[in-house]
Length: 167
Image 1 (tube, rainbow, N blue to C red):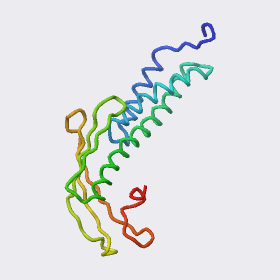
Image 2 (image 1 turned 180 degrees about the horizontal axis):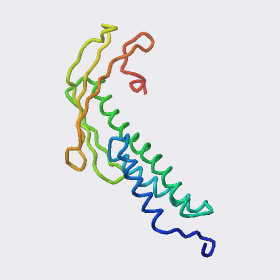
Image 3 (image 1 turned 180 degrees about the vertical axis):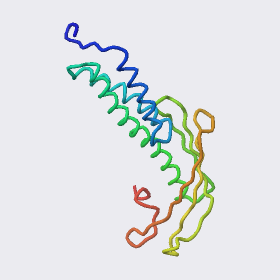
Image 4 (image 1 turned 60 degrees about the vertical axis):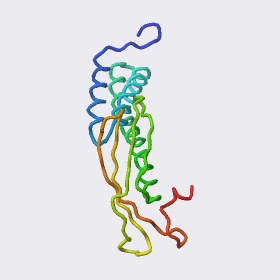
């Protein structure tokens, strides 16, 4: 310890960074998870080193927890953006919708979604379902595609696309 500030070496920080990247690739889908893991890992390392008796161990343990939490949060934010675009297309029933946002790396992420198929819900012929396809671009480069199905539900006895519609 030097002047009340704990000093830690490079190996715990490198271990945290490497682990952050590995964890970001597990169980997550996109750039948001990777960025979240890196930010969470570094933040957790700093906090762990500051509060632990052994700054190296504190950095490593705090960094691991921070990386996992950051990956989960970053992935959830990006998935929520994608879900919002899909919801807009399902509700409108039009040809398509586009949504753009900047991720935590400052990259321009663009989701484009379109209705592939519309049909009546098998369990209730008064409700509509829509199959939606979407594509993702990051800074103008293709970054993946996917599909989702959304069906109306009954709220107070009336067909609705869900609570988001009433917000």
